[in-house]
Image 1: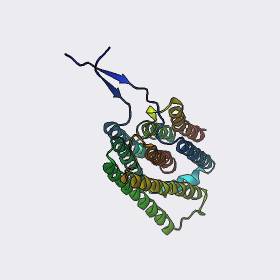
Image 2: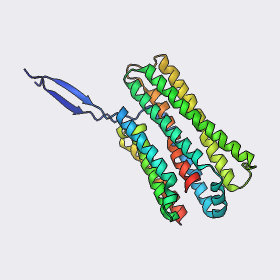
Image 3: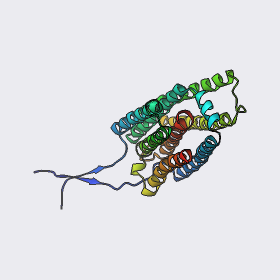
Length: 194
Length: 95
């Protein structure tokens, strides 16, 4: 006798992670939106200064950082699929890989800052570099905080705290990390490319 | 009464979707960087780069953040962000 199977599309409309984290992410995005718009307006008012400033930035370093952050985000996304399948150790390994790519980002960013300092360029050089250092350093702080969060969820996963469909802490941490990526994909073309 | 197995098909992210998303994000990033070398008009470069931002943002929001499977309001909020911010920037640059 046949045993028919039916596939049901379950309308599982659930916000991943904690609601508080999503409000926090929205607040962070709003702050950065103000920075981005402020930067654009300043560029319109000081077109030549911004054009010269952008020419002094290392575009390849920016691209390497873009690839590093996107790849890091990819490993974090895959780590989430592993934790959903109760494969905590694999998830931890993927989070550590994601952190390795974040370290590449941080190293390149520090190298960029040091290169500019060697040329005598600082936050006080002109409006372009004031905004460049403020926005990129603020973003870098978010990367550092994101790494702390990734370490925390990796530690919790290693201890077996994400079981029995209780993943909200892990999901909140991964969402924060993707926000860092989301901000960079706007920041990079705005400051380095266009 | 129907005998059988009910298979729940959930739309959560899987490895294939994440890999496709990653590949698209990297490809679009490289295109954005080299766009000014192939396009003479600065206006077109700005619009092209910011359209790419919106496309990349959609991948991150839907695939990495898994908001394609979240309540509509949250997805709309985040998709609005990655469309509105580049749009405002474009308007400022082209004004």
